[in-house]
Structures are given as C-alpha cells and as structure tokens.
Image (cartoon, rainbow, N blue to C red; front, side, top):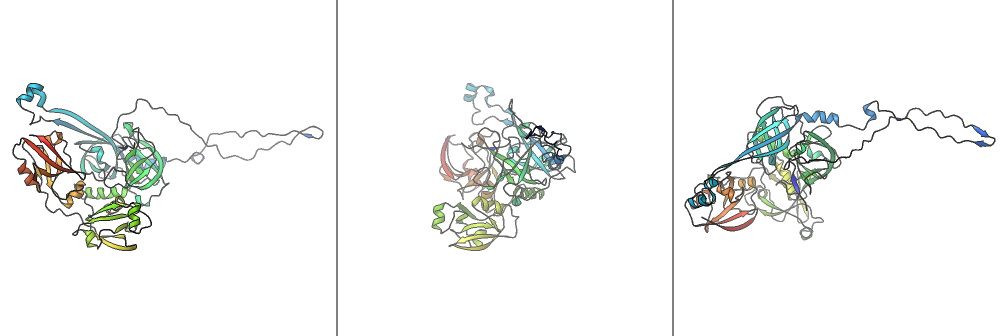
Length: 498
C-alpha cells in the first residue's frame, strides 16, 4: 500500500525515538615520515625485522581538516524559515431539520444546540519578501481562520491569509506586524539536476526548527496524485509531518521547492519526499502581490490524455511520451493555434513534456499574455504551434447564490459553470449544471457531505442549468429530494428524505 501524506497532517511527537549515532572523524593530514632506525644485527647473517609504530591520532586543528559542513548555507537560509500555527473555532449550529418536538423528546433539549470545537494545524513556511510575505502549503491553513507565524528569533506574529491555491497546494500569508524581515532568495527549479545536494528546513513533529540534508532523487515526478499540477521534485532529505510548507534549499541558500508530501507506510520519512518546484511557487507569489485572490493561469481549451504503448504504436510513435489531444474546444487557444484531436504535444517552449501533467505544469508557470511554442507530433512529423496565453473565459457569469430554506443544499454557495470555474475548481466530466463553490460550516449541506466542486445536474427530475433555477427548485419544502450530482467525473443519484 502506498500512502502519500501531507507532511504536516500529523503533529504528535512519538513518545520515544531510538537513535544510534556513529561519529566518523577524519585524522589530521600525515606529517613528515618518521626516521626509522637501522636494522640491528643480532647474530651473524641474521637481520631482525622492524615494524614502525602507528602514527599518533590528533584532534583536527582547522575546519579544512573536518568533514565538509553545511553550516554557512544554514546560517544564510534559516532566519527566513518560520513555523506556521493555524486554528479555527468550529461552531456546530442546531440542525433545522431535526429541531422539532419529536427530536427533542428522544434526544433532549440540547440535541439541536450549537457546539464548539477547536481545530488546529501546524506546519512550516518561508519568508520571500521583506514586507512579510510567507509561502506555505494550502493544506497547512486549509479551513483555518486564525494564523500565527513564529520566526527563527522566537517572535510570534499574527498573519492574514492573502491567497489560497488548492490546485497547487500553496498559500501566501502576510505578517501583520513589523518590517524588514529576513528573506530567502528564489532559485530556478528548471536548473536542478538529479544528484544535486539539497537541504530541507522545517518544524517536523513540532520539535522545533530542524535541518536535514539529501540529494535530488528525481525530477518531474508525475502521477503522484497530490495536486492538480502533479510535477514534483523528489528528494531523500528527511521530510516529516510538520515540514509542510518549509523550503527545499540548494547549495547557494536559495529556495528551489516547497516541501509538501512524503511517501510513507508509517507516517514518518522513508527517504521519499516531494516538493513543489519553485518556478510554480513564483506564479502564486506574483498573484498575491498583485492583490488577486485567485491564481489565473493560461487556458488551453483542450483535454489531454496520456499515451500507452498501444496508442503510441497506433500513432506511429517510437515511444509513449507526450500528451495526446483528446478533445479540443473550437473557441479555445489550442484550436486557434491550428491543433486538433490526435496531435501529440511533446514540448513547451523547448522544454520536454512527457505527459499531460508536464504540459499543464509548463503552461501553468507561464505569465498571462504573449505566446508559448508547443512542439507537436502530427502524422509522424514534428511541427511548432504558437498558443495564446489567455485565462479561461467566465461565460456565462457566475451569478453566485447562497442557498437557504430547508433543502439538502442549505448553506451551500453555488455558481454557474464556465471554463473559468472548471479550471478554478478542477471540475471533471461536466460542462453544464451548477457548481458548489463553498459550504458553510455546520450547515445541512455539510452534514450531507456535499463538497466544493460538486456539479448539481438535476433536482427532483428537473434539470438545473443555472443558480437561479436551483434556488427556485429548492425554495419550498418536499417530501423527498432526488438529487443527481457529478463528482470527479462520476455521476450518481441519491434520494434524501424531506
């Protein structure tokens, strides 16, 4: 069984850790050769052998005589690494559908009363701007309302959430007090090579700021299933719960990735950790600095499919790499560039794209405006296509509605579906209906497990094409609710009592 665990999902410290450390020192450089006494003749014709004494071991007298140290890099990087503490007070309001005399008779007067619960999360982060911008993982602060940041100098400063980007599992915070904070320079993740040395800095298990060292084990790791942009740096530097949001640092003291998840069966590090490349992080920082609440990225207007060996053989390709255009929106940038179904994208601006995740990542790091060059295989020939880098259109408008009344959707905020909404919420397999955008804590919609990104297709056998239609059909009471939803590309129907 494979477990991919957000590295701050678990914050409890094990009661005892058995550690055996072996220190291996390096002897001083050898001195001049010892003078050896001449062999002594003990008897005529016989010479006694001589064994020189072992060289004396001495304490190293300089840093050069000791194994290489990463201390200078740590001193440069560590002041900008922070601990992130997030919390939320959960209020559980009374269920309006259960707050009736019969319910109170069996469960008591307190059965429908509000309750309180404190949810907490712990992770790491890195300051990337002197004004106090902090990058961390979205799952560290997901659903949280109160955030505090502890700096390396022990100061604790409140922070507000500027931007959440669930598609990349990144978030940007802003420290609300102070200025001229220590920062870490952003590197270039495309310049990394397998075998490069790296450091991971963070707060594993809440024990305090910790540094671990390893190498880049692999690049462009896809099919990991952690985020929509599955294109990760893999490292064997120890990453554990609590490291989430902390930086992966190169030997120049620059951020090259944000540590996000581990492959583990035990919950602890087994030497397989994943970091979001810093080139993707840069686009999220730019959106936050621009005052945006969402990260807008280039829209292809096409769906991509991975290549199997059978598909590659059918297309006359010598190997199954690239992304097959499975469907093309006639009004999208891909169609404008002259591409069509059956074309295979193999590169973006000269950088290889071996699968759909790589194409999505390469385009996702591009700023809006201008063009990108796609390397394409068509009929066994390589061609180049210029694609316009434009955001997905919001047509029709969202027309956001928060549903009230006494239906299963009470407490849900819904929007009209559009290419922009599909991109933003990672909607799969649906092009019509109404999308659930937000769910109020403690609402009936939450209790029935409605989720952000669900697409409402029908209610009581009535097709739903707009938010106003859904508001109208759920305004009254009903003996039952027959609901057809699309979730993750799967369509299902359920019946709920009224």
